[in-house]
Image 1 (tube, rainbow, N blue to C red):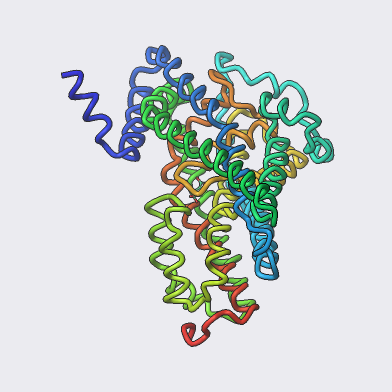
Image 2 (image 1 turned 180 degrees about the vertical axis):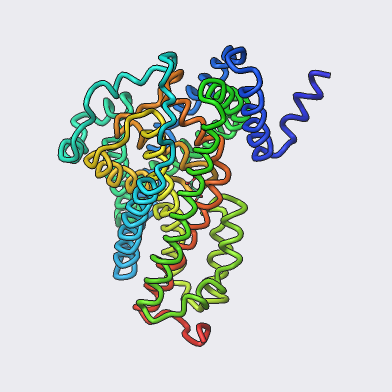
Length: 427
Ligand code: ASP
């Protein structure tokens, strides 16, 4: 009997399981109140598991991402697409922060009320100022940065290492080339292996989400649910604005028809939405570019894989809104300086986000730490994070859709400026 339940559990789709965990958590929390508080350790276990993989995932996927950029291909097309990716990512975080300030999700939740879920220690010490954050980006000891989980320093070092590896890989000297390949395979292996571990952790997610949400509801009542609703709304308004204003606007600026653009990428958008993976959507994005939009292979075969690795505008929006939600939920709204730190960190974190389902959720944990909201089991921050994790599948569908749409918009724009676009397909 137990064996059957166990086997059955693994057969059910993960999204369904997490949603059931969320719903049951709400019901049990509301009905049993403080009698359900004993499940807290099951939630704490989930938080610890997540934290365990954050640094390896971020580090390895950033190195892999940066090392996959071929410096020889980084000609005019490369530079153009890179600039486009950076500008749209910064716009996306800013939009996310704007939505966060406008909708103010999490406001008045006071998850830390009652004294039991204490605020993390770091909140008692003032968070670093923006200029301090900038200066601190360069680690004096990268290993120390990794072991203490210093986000920006890890990102900075990983990017440099990745770029160095890509230069090695394309060296004229065969032995250097070999070394570069070896290094790149090594980090790819770490990234892939960590994703397998993430897969296991996600199998525990339904139980973890159940426990964390039950405790949140038992302590804070169903008012917390309303706040998740506002969080989802704020994020989706941000997603839609990014697509409708930023991408359509840019496409139009370069004299292309936004309607034709969206029609041409219907399959890619839908695939991204349902698979929640930019990398998984790559073949469909490429086909849409080739068949429907008339982009030359030279352009999309470089820009799309690069975009699926480093350009995550949807994730950037999500990070902006969620950090504001978390800070509000624990009763310590972000100052202007902290929001500036979020822009910098979230752009870098979005670059480091792998194009696979739920990757953004791990990045969020990194960004939180940078603004002085570290994820520690049993704290109010962890309770708020659990709420975001419970809603992650919905949020992830939206952000993957935006991520992929942004990559293709940039690809078309660069192709147009390089005269590598078959304009007859746009009529
Ligand atoms: N799932 C997203 C993607 O593949 C990444 C994320 O989780 O933010 O584009």
